[in-house]
Length: 88
Image 1: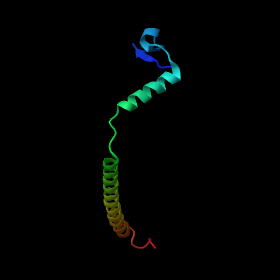
Image 2: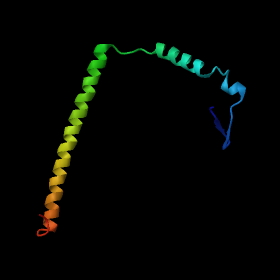
Image 3: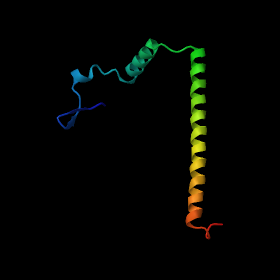
Image 4: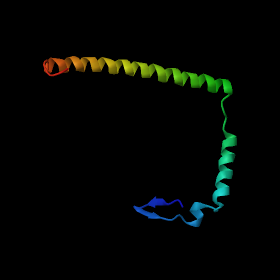
């Protein structure tokens, strides 16, 4: 049951605030009604945008991987400079 926040006190909504209570069937009926109003993208547009997301994700992943490798090498050299005898 939804509760509203008013004046710092949680309270149950009145019958006029919550509307008629149709339960779970009314909720899913409204969900289906809203989904019918959606303008869905075409298969071609979905495929194109999915490929774009995959390409951008791969590019960012490769860039971050290269940056990580670079930082690892810099820190290895830094640590070797601090402890020249103890690393094996």
